[in-house]
Length: 309
Ligand code: BDR
Ligand code: CA
Image (cartoon, rainbow, N blue to C red; front, side):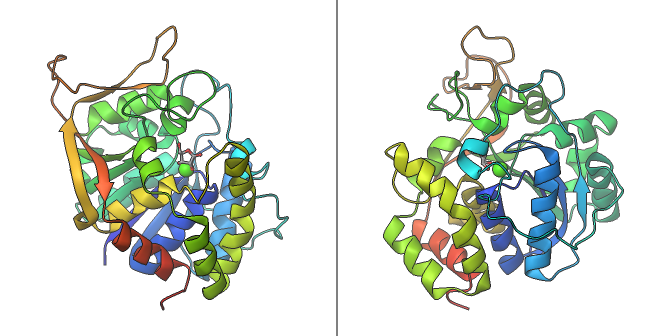
């Protein structure tokens, strides 16, 4: 089984990704970012998931805001004010480690050099801070898989053609994209091509176990939001990234290109710049995942919801 270190801002689709990780891999730790909602909520939501799964996965709190500029928006309008659909879950009992996320990322990768796949499902603030503390971090991870970016500019943030995770903390993404010689990038547009239909997802929610009950509750707000915006189905960006992290063989089409982050643009701060025509003279470091095998992706999600198990 793969060994994962997950940096995440739960978040509805983060939750599905973590359920998938639990079903298919060993989770060394959850390092928590601010993003979809504030850090207090994302930490609490991670602990709620640890309770649900009945595991002792350590949870590490990370940075409460972006590295340089305070982000203009969160994603509470999609994920609910508490990030988990405003269901009102009880206070979790799973402990919060006292170790800051960036330090935990460094320690765990030192303890298991070369063994861990780093999966980044939120703004890249914690990872960037860890890289500033120790630039040798990339040498100690087996792989990095990032959910982020909008490679042809169809973003999902308010005012710029940016994707949320990169747009929330562009400087952090700039640091991470510059530090790793190679990583898998699952962007927002790939996510839209791999949404699940309402009918298939409802069938899984009905047939699954208590993980499906839980996910069915928290996903309600996001589905309502999508429906209001003419998007049907369940869009699960982080779940798609997790599928690639768990099984790289699921990828059926990808392109390796240099990817940079716009930090100053008048219209484009936080946008990902993909050097499709190799004009920038930078090494092509990002394996941009364009298509995966949807049948295998669906099977991974079903198992995570307890449908086929
Ligand atoms: C990303 O932003 C968040 O809202 C999701 O959890 C995902 O990580 C999609 O742009
Ligand atoms: Ca996320």
